[in-house]
Image (cartoon, rainbow, N blue to C red; front, side, top):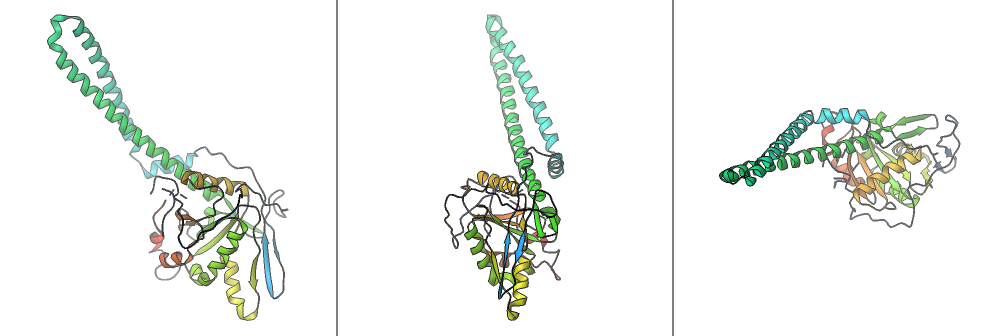
Length: 330
């Protein structure tokens, strides 16, 4: 599957790279990701996701979520520690780069003063070529190590930004049912999340397109997180007939998760779109690895068939062994 940022941790050091999937393209109006859901929480005073179910030949589930202030965008100490673990010698390299820059600059300063003195004294004119040679070496060395330091520092900042996005994603909250709220990080090693973010018609169509692959997606540990950017999550209709009971149960399980604290989800998704140069109104999907990091993303409907073809089973003799086959981190 084509990859995202170059997202959303995750190439390793760049933002997510949303792309347009040729098979599925969707045009929407002027919707904003900042739209909020409204509801009343029975467990939390000000935050809630309510699910209403009706018993008939078909059942309908309607979900909504409340808002909460978004966390700070500052890089946390955890992200810094993870950066040090991933690149243990970066700080050492940057220290020596700075030392060499300082050495070259000091040598260049000394050579400059000698050059001025030699130019002012005709008797020392023969020393000028040698002084110029040394000055050129000092300036060249300082410039080279300054470039190396700049490149290393840029890579560090990109990595920190990626790790910070990963951490922010892992802290986002999901409602499993009316009584259980978990964070995305709780599903590490358990499920591969696919986040569908867009207006209600986009979510509903993604739901319909996933139906033929329900069993295969569940076998691969895939769970879907629908995020309605216009604040109007559609109603998912499930056939409650006896002959469709097993499929309906699986469909509900595949689409059982719902995001809460919508401002945090909206801010996180807006950041990914901004980094990828994608319009805020564009419907997108993001596919996470089993370890919770982003493995792919795109503009348009999720390629359910590609997920089935690329992802290994979550259980069985190949479980664990093929976890690394989730795809490279963006």
